[in-house]
Amino acid sequence: MIEYAFYTTEPLDFPLSENIIVINDSNTPTIISNSKETNPIVYAPEINFYIKHSKAHILEKIDVINKLYEIRGIKLDYAKFNEYKKEVKNRLLIIGNKEEAENFDDLKELEKYYSLPEWIKDISGTIENLKFTIQKGNESIDLEVDQAIWFNAPEIAFKQRGIVDPSDIGVEKAKEIIRKRVGIYEYRNYVTYNKDVCQYHHRVLEETCGNCANVCPTNAIIKDDETKELVFSHIDCDGCGGCVSVCPSGALDFSAIPRDSFYEISKIFSGFIPFIVPEDMVKNLEIELPKNVIPFVIEGRKFLDEVHLLTLFQDSGVQIVFLNDNFSKGEKEAIKLINEISNRKFGKNAVLFTDNPEEAEKLLYEAEKIPEAKYMINENNLNKREIFSIRLSHLIENDDLGIIDLQDNNFIHYGKVEIDESKCTLCMGCVSVCNVGALTAHDEDGTLKFDASMCTACGYCEVACAEKCLKVIPDKLELNKDFFRQKTMAKDEPFYCIMCGKPFAPKKAIERIAAQLLPIFTDELKKKSIYCCPECKSKLLFNEYIERKTNGK
Image 1 (cartoon, rainbow, N blue to C red):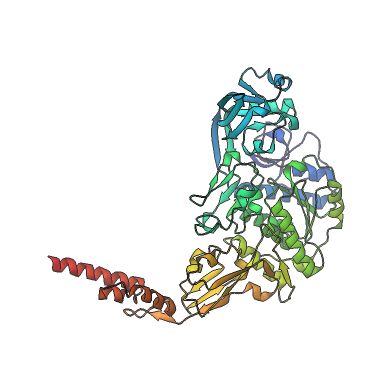
Image 2 (tube, rainbow, N blue to C red):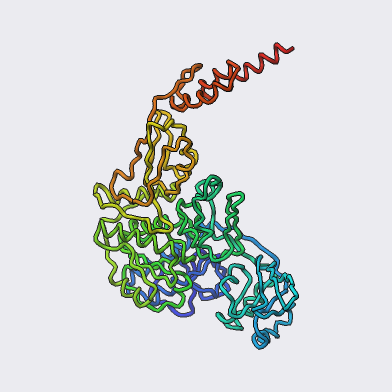
């Protein structure tokens, strides 16, 4: 099987890199190809698009084409898909008037049911088990089907996978989709999830997030408010990636281009103009590409956030051109933030964006190099907030670029913490509920420290504070070096274990625990255990247990 294949039946005007094999037999097995005719594992339409429209000289074309194959190879290597299958039977509900329904009379292989739109009262489930409640006069019917045709379907219908609207795509295309789905229906996950940094998962005291479920256009992500857990239905996911762009902590990642993949790809754009365009747009895009441009085709058109954009901007050192006919809310916020920061630092936007192809062509010719923005780091094993903090800190350097007010934002938030140190016992309850690492305990010097650049302003630490001495000040992103440094919020001398002499907790915390437990404990051994480190406490109580068992005999 050929890894990098270029399929053509006509002679090429210029040579390709030796690792790209030119073929003219569509039956040749390929992994990455410029043509669907070879039935490749990965189809790369941007290759033909680039060759057709680029105005670069031959040597640059050869180099960029090789880079386009390399980018697809990285995506394939790093993709985090799981494959799933489900059997879809032949039950079809057609919702429309008599004339509309008659368009599907030739689907004789399917078991068809019919309903007028006004009879539909409720809908749930997904492809293979779509459930409709149909109210016809005084008669109510619960009907379960595998798929549905719905003329002029309302928006709520598309929250379920398995419903097709011929009014949008045409009758013949609708038939093609319905027929193709019957049998073994294959699907995959488009997002991965890390519950450990999720700002919704097990937030039992107060809900602090739910952005992903709120922006999901289907029922792919649902909040279970009883368990405070997210429920994922990968079969319902349309792969837009919008949930990734609005996740404050990076708990969600896009499977087709996960963060480590995006990081590796961004390095390829060094010195080139990155031209971001959704895959389903590039196939029919007719615009001219000036030299020094590399198309960056994205599978999900809504997943990019502020970290993706800043990474690509700094790795390339060039203004980004982003064409998208349907920017997500998260992407719009991210672009606005990155451009505000870039304008304060360089007097220029970092991201030039548009939904118009003709405007995109103009922007490609206007895009400039900003060499002072160039900066590369090793992002491996860093989370979303850490990456942004390191990159933004370097961009700001020793400047003071003022404060960005984020109070009108829906998704990108930062916060500062104020603590009344006279009341703080350093119980570290705030640290235990902060899963993004903004609040941290330091036993070596008995301090509680805070890093504002990591804070999502979720406010959970304020809710969890037992002494009510902590307050979160939200939505002030300070563009100065001090904002990106840990600050000591409270300090206490360490308490030393009375048995081994090892420091194990702040003195105030032990005093607080003692004040609560000493009046309750009558056993002197238990009283003593309050002042012991966990290891010595276990030894103390175990020895007492053995002694009691021995004396009992």
